[in-house]
Image 1 (cartoon, rainbow over the protein chains, first blue to last red):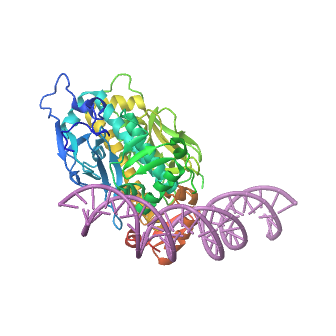
Image 2: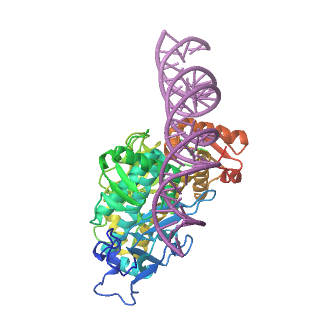
Image 3: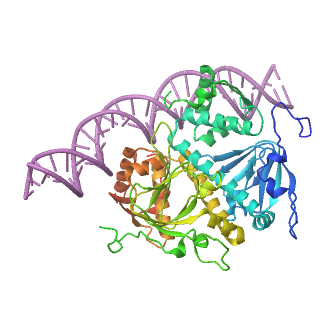
Length: 238
Length: 238
DNA sequence: CGCGATCTTGAACACGGTCAACTGACGTGG
DNA sequence: CCACGTCAGTTGACCGTGTTCAAGATCGCG
């Protein structure tokens, strides 16, 4: 299905109204002199990198359509997938610390991304306290999410991690106004495993396990969650 | 040794010059009207909470002396220790997202903490772009560190995690101008285990293992690192 | 239809967890 | 002064979750 075709059954796009970087994108009044414009609709194919770990942070990004993964290379094993980006998510904010991107952002499929030049973000954040506070909030929210992921990785079993992952995706779809029960996984098993610190075999086994219990049916990349409560209460042991 | 005794061999304090919140603390010119003052020298005893998870974020904090842990309660197992705070570290920034603290901060021993009222931080960040950028940088640096911890928890073995932990502490002491080779652990084995997603038994075994290999000698809470390179290259298997 | 990539399933193994006993430091009280 | 209790840490034996290695199954696509 080409990008310009009508929207598929499973939503891939998001309206600007619910974009995380909306305050950095929309027109302001008065427009500060020399304010760089937002470059919209950067296009990526599956496997293309939006930015690479270690590269200077030159822009912030917002996903408009499609999905990306944030990856960190860890010596001695495969890459870790820090986070998956859904339409409306922002990326590149972690670079504010060191002026360099800490991770790489790679497209999982055809993507459309809006690019906010760093100078624009700075000028707006410096000129409008509300924008500055918004940016602080975005970074802080990502921070508390990241630390919550640490908790999960450190203290929960494989089944609990996978259940948490599915429920997290569900709630993110739901936040965007789509069904929390049924959606399509934009990533393959290997990417799920790399994200959760598991192996593809374990992920596969657990998914069939969930299916046999009637908690969720996962066929290929198509997910339907039947018993969110059971998934949420998924016990530590088998 | 009582707290009022002369400074011990192992440093516990930090100068304001290297405090993460210095730009929010020191005098500014011109002073904005109604700028709340910094409350310095809040004192805590071992076990006291500086703030509790879920409480409204009313201030930012900087550790002046002593050590704290940031904890998150995870249902079904003990608390997870998200991070340890050393003198000079800041806390409470993760609340910028939700206006509530995501974690609890608890003193590991007698502590002295400076408290920056949130209003002060906001006013300064809004009035001085450099301060705003500094705060963004602080939160972003914490974010990239948190995501790096996720990588470690997801993809490295118990021995590697413990080695990473010791090396991280070493480099943080070194940043503060103290020896990276020899220092005192401010936390007990349980707290190390809760931080790394391990058990006290595993931590204990690995420490004696490191000692037998001559990589590090850990007697009680006293640490001396002999072969940082070996620790850094610590292999996945035994 | 056939090839390759992705996913699933099975069997053996190992890392780290669990349970339990032991050690040593420290403090209290007889 | 030493017996005792407590608590943190260490050590050992066993076990289970999740990995590893190796076959199959399934799907997409030429």
